[in-house]
Image (tube, rainbow, N blue to C red; front, top):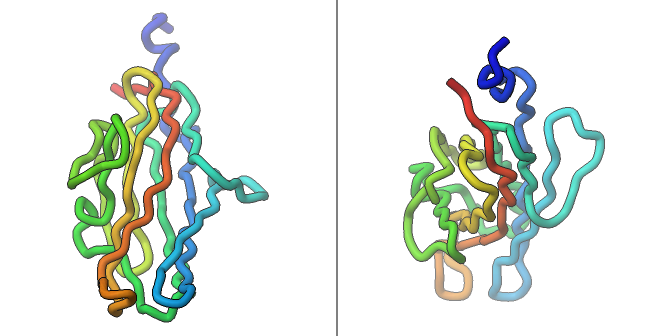
Length: 154
C-alpha cells in the first residue's frame, strides 16, 4: 500500500454523531440544551461536539426533543436549519466550508461534516419555527463543533 493510501480513512470506520437537542419553555422564553454521542457509545456527553482528526465525511444527526409546548420544528430547508461559520457565531446562511449534504424534516436534521483541512471550531446555529412565544416564532440555538481536521476521501 502506498503512503498516501495509508493516510485515507476507511469510510466504514466513521461513526455518525447523534445530537439530541432539548427545547423547553420558561415563561416567555424558549431555552435549549443538547447531549451528544457517537453511534455505539453507551453514554451522552455535554458541550462541544468533538470530531476526531483524520475522520472525513462524518454524518451528524440532530434530533429535536421539543418539551416547550410551542410545536417547534427544524426549518424545512436544511441550509436554513443550520448556519455555520469558522470565525464566530454565524450571522447568515452558510456551511463554513465544512457542512455538506443535508436533509431536514420536523424533528430531524441530518448533515455531513467534511472535517477537512486544518483543525478548527465550527460555530453553528440551529433554526426552528413554532408557535409564537415572547413575540417570535423563529428560534435559534448556537452550540459548537470542534473539528480535528485532516479527513480525506478519494
